[in-house]
Length: 226
Image 1: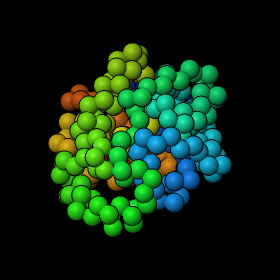
Image 2: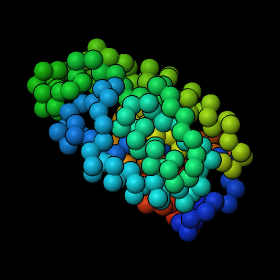
Image 3: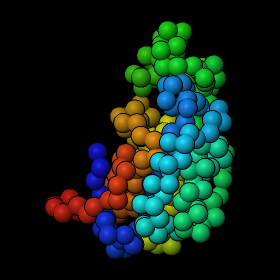
Image 4: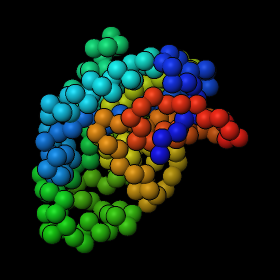
């Protein structure tokens, strides 16, 4: 899914329709390639991941963000740094935006998790509240991450844009919380590819999902749902 209701793809700021939050996942890491569960383990970007961050930063910089906040884990911090270098914005780092702590799952491959913790994995996929590997509940991740995003959003001008550089699981739970969805529905959002982003826009009835797993500049929606 990649659709937008505000603004054009020509760069520059969209027409004023409220504030906007861009939730940007970090670039590729070695553990991503190996399909290892990273969680809060501090894994750095690969050269490919750094290249992804540079490419995406050029696109996002053209949207003229007003502020950047990022997880303090190296993979997110390095990704945010590429945008900061182009925009001149100072990145604020917050550990509240870290990926889910997943205890003994961290460092295991997808296959190893299913083999060793199959019932726990299946319950998580069914949307049940599960402390994966003895770690955090998804609702607890939202409890710490969503307030960070809202706190920085409140500092924006009326039509301002905040870029949040974080992790796939944390971004999904934050989107679910800001949209007011019950936690068992959060898995309905597909995963974010490395260095892709989702966009929330401020509407008359709260936050709306305008883009999900996007990797190009948003285009305006022309139709009856504007």
